[in-house]
Length: 192
Image 1 (spheres, rainbow, N blue to C red):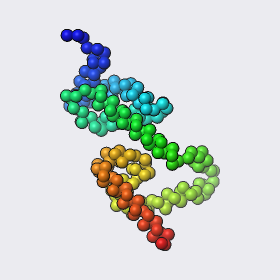
Image 2 (cartoon, rainbow, N blue to C red; image 1 turned 180 degrees about the vertical axis):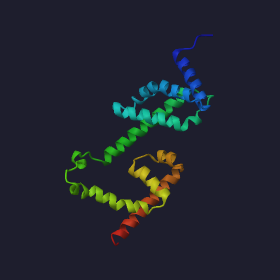
Image 3 (cartoon, rainbow, N blue to C red; image 1 turned 90 degrees about the vertical axis):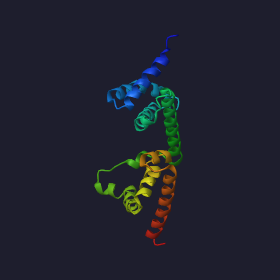
Image 4 (cartoon, rainbow, N blue to C red; image 1 turned 45 degrees about the horizontal axis):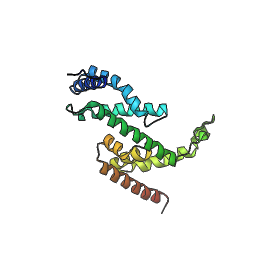
C-alpha cells in the first residue's frame, strides 16, 4: 500500500479534528480552525483580489463553518465541504460589493462633522433617521427584522433567512410586505 500524499494526510487530519469538534472537543475545534485558515485564505484569494476583502471573506467562512459544522457528514471528505463554503462566501461578497457599487457613491464630505453641535444635529441624515425609526418600529417584528437585514444591512436573502431562522421564502415575503407597509405609512404621514 502506497503512503498517503501530503494532501491526503492533511485531509485525514482535518477530518479527525472535525469529528472530535462535532463531538464537543473545543481544543480540537480550535486546532482545526487554525489549521484550515491558510487553506481558506488561499481559496478566497481566487474570488477577492483585495486583501482586506479577502480577510473579511475568511472570517465569513470561519463563522459559517462554526454555525453549520453539525452538517458535515463524517463519511464524506472535509476539504470539498470547506471549499464549497469558501466559494459561496466569496461569491456572496462579490455580489454584495457589486450591488453596493451600483447603488452607492462614495462621498468623503458626507461623514464630515463640525465643531458646533447644532450643525451636526440638523443634518439631513439625522432627520432621516428620526423619521424612519418610528416607521420601522410600527412594522411587525418579523417584517422589520427581514427589512433591516436585507435592505439596510445588505445581507442576501439566504443570509437573512439563516440569521433569523425564517425560510428564504418567508424573508422575501416579509421584506415585500414591510416595503409595502412603509409606503402606506409614508403616504399617511405626508397626508395622502
